[in-house]
Length: 88
Image (cartoon, rainbow, N blue to C red; front, side):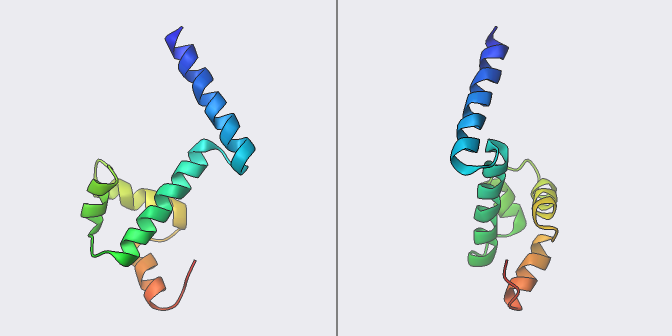
């Protein structure tokens, strides 16, 4: 019974997020995380390892994989593009 209550709560939350923002809760959370990562990559001196720790990734490679899946670029490619005037 507890498991079904958790599923119901997740569905209710997701339905509310879709109604408000037009995207799933999962998508919204990933986009917010990605924006925070991009901001820290560009405007702090944190290394990928430090960012992985800050954002609670269990390993820096997991952060790098998430970033590449979301942007199509590695962290260093994203930084290089930004420094060369390619903005997203």
